[in-house]
Length: 329
Image (tube, rainbow, N blue to C red; front, side, top):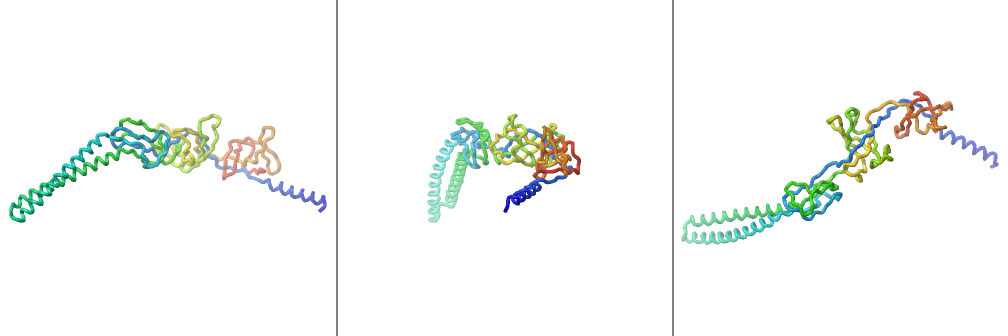
């Protein structure tokens, strides 16, 4: 193969490649979502309260703010010293009733033998049977009272009602609590972002719409930077004080603090705009240009960038009309 033929072959391949990397796009009107940046607040999906079921002194406090817990974990133990004394009294009462029952059973058996020989009357046996039945019922009642006290003692264990992360522990070791008093607040079932939008946007909010979420923190340097996407999952039907509430679900909010604020861009309207693919824009001397199909370069004024069907687009404010064909490298 001589050099002249090889050079011609390279030239033809280069021309084909050059032609293959250029395309055309027709400028037309398309819907662009109008985004509004608002601050959203991270909240837990549910807030579970671990409460003391009995009154007493807090001992064995095992959690602090930020501790992850699972449902059923023991968070603390509440001890009521009176329950131990009541249990001792019930045990003593049960022992006394048990002795009286044994005596009554002996008396009943003796009366039945005497009745069989005709020494005593039938009413003697009936009286002994009644005495035995009364003591048996008292013994059963005392056992039930003991079971109640044992259950109350077991209820001194404060258990986590759900899995999550402890937000607050309003008690300390050795403090006295009353029945029903909260021992820990737990953020459970994941996090979401709650938005509060002006009333004028209420009619334009649609459940299922995609939203953008900014970087964590309120650093001005990161303002305007969207790093995650989410969905508008709920729009509340009540407007309170000129504000409408909406909830946004976003993956990966586990590192956020509950109550932390972050920027969220929500679609509140749609408008028709002229746009071209972002790759069709070239900059020369600080001016934006697009190249028409005839090879003519036209200066344009561009607007916001957005995506349509996964393709980066740029809004054209002036310089083009619907139906124009532009070259897309």
